[in-house]
Length: 277
Length: 169
Image (tube, rainbow over all chains, first blue to last red; front, side, top):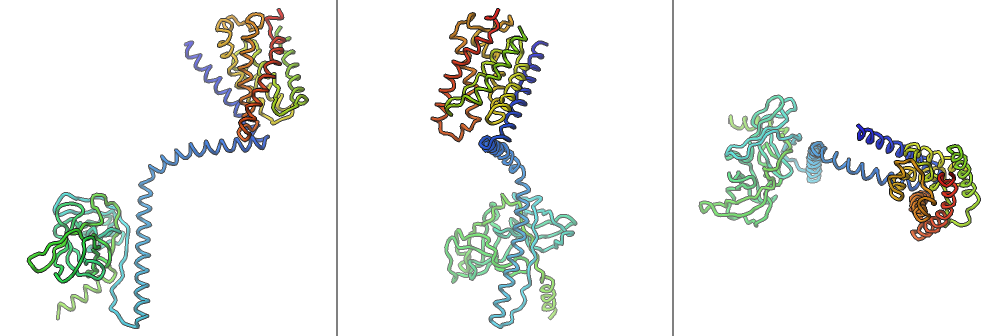
């Protein structure tokens, strides 16, 4: 009981003391220029320390939001980049006064991976964008570091994509921007290896050369860097089989971009007409 | 007895006002008897009451004397907070338990001088810092402290002698 009273007294005394000192400091602050400067400086230092620490904690917990914002920015930049590419092509066409067949533009959309499998031979990815967002089957899934997969089916809110880490997946790729083209497939072993096949023996390349998407499909745009040449060997004495180190490590991927060819249906219709002949 | 102390206390506060307004010969010396006034508040007066006395004494001097308003209050209130602790440290717990007051007759001049030096130091360190110490050279602050503590302690011994209730009995 006596101890409790002592504690109450101590707290009361401390509170009164602090109140009086605050009042005195307030008087100093309002009546002396030097004191005003010094107190302001001390308060600023205190605020910087307290708010700085608070800000660091807040920043740590807001990293998820920052990541989502970056993904959105990335998506917007991809769209701008695509628009720039289109403009450049138009200028080139005008300057050469030539008529090229229309290649069709691509539409981009940011998406987050909801689920991804990595330890199977037929891996898949589920994305948080679906039919209500305008996603259609056979849309490409890419990142700034390469090809991720192809959308196979869509529900209202989600999309199911076949991952590049799938033994049935193949994407047309070329070594360098002017080099030979061949199908690029997953090596079936890890999250960062692939194999580029059917490269004719007359084509020369070096270890470390970049492998890009060829653009010879209606799914992926051309010139997306996919990986680098790591090793090669001659297959059946006729072509090179090249081991490619992927730029995108599938073990750490979370944000992707959905890409769909706006002229895809027109191309399909044209192919259908050709098939009838 | 109580009334006499109060009257003497108020008169000494007026003396402090005179010191502040008319005895400023050099920026190195800041004469103050306020710490010893607070130290000599009877021991039966508790810390909270002591804080209030110090607060209003400081405010009075701040508003009536030249200088920055709030500076004496700022430096004097901590002296009131430490008053009983310093008395206990220098003169022992017994003095507080019996509700007696210290005096030079009872404890000798050295102990009284020492406790006055301590309260002067607390007061002056806070006063010099609040008076722009952070933007002045350290040597100036040091000399100001040494000169003020010496002058203030000597003057305060005389004040303590006047205020010591036991000596008046």
